[in-house]
Image (cartoon, rainbow over all chains, first blue to last red; front, top):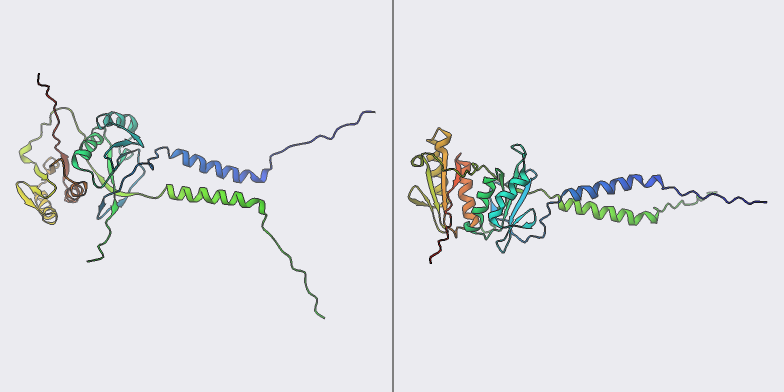
Length: 138
Length: 140
């Protein structure tokens, strides 16, 4: 006589699908933020009347050592215009925002060639700044 | 006689705690990453390689050094500069006449430059940079 084995069925528990979907969504949201420049050391300058700004197409930074970065990668200022033109592509006006993060101690010799390169690439320049803190002694 | 009801203890399932903690970590990470940024938009005319044929005598010229702001030859403080540039630009009707040529000394600090450019923007001027190009000449 032949004894039949009981079949073992393995199924993915369906009640976890919601959690898995949610985690995947967050994972792709983080991946979409590929322009990560959080490793760059810089301090923003302060200015009165700053406003909230829309999402950038590219981010150019000048760090505490006055080195230039495009989307977190170091780049020579002379190569910036060409690289930015490639990044901006054929994006329509209004969607060509380029964030410029300049360390507060930078001088004109550091940031002016960068501004000229952004202008040459046809980017919409947005200086990233902090609102001026009120002086407590006033 | 009073009958005591048996208390019903409902424990949340402990096996879900790690999932909850993980999801909370990711939630706070995302919140920190998408912190909104503040700044100042600036309209710049597109740089062209061809020589600019604009009538330069019509344009307002501003020179910035670490210690002074010079508007058409007269040195000013930032508060005075705001008033003067507003009054100068209010006389200009054509867009081409609203171009303000800014020339900065190489050691001009960024906050000073920003203050001047914000004043020009708010007065309705079109900021144009005059940058000295460096040329290397090899001497034999």
